[in-house]
Image 1 (cartoon, rainbow, N blue to C red):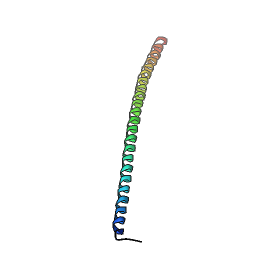
Image 2 (image 1 turned 60 degrees about the vertical axis):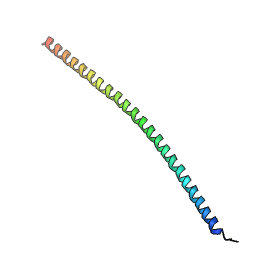
Image 3 (image 1 turned 45 degrees about the vertical axis):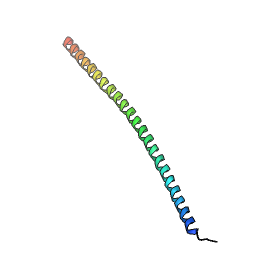
Image 4 (image 1 turned 90 degrees about the horizontal axis):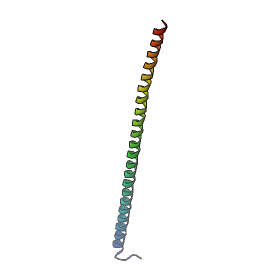
Length: 87
C-alpha cells in the first residue's frame, strides 16, 4: 500500500497545505486592511460633515444671540424712553 516514497508525498502534501493556508491568511489580511481603510475614510468624511454642521450651528447660535441681545437693548431703551416721557 505504501511505497518507499510515501514520506516524500506526505511532506509535499503538508507543504502544499501550509502554502494554501498562508495564501488564505494573506488574502484575509489584505481584505481586512482594505475594509479598515474604507471605514477610516468613511469616518473621516462623517467627522468632516459633523464639524461643518457644528460650525453652522455655532454661527446660528452666536448670530441669534447677538440679534437677541440687540433686541433686548432696544426694548430696554424704549421702556426707558416711555418712563421718561410719562413721568
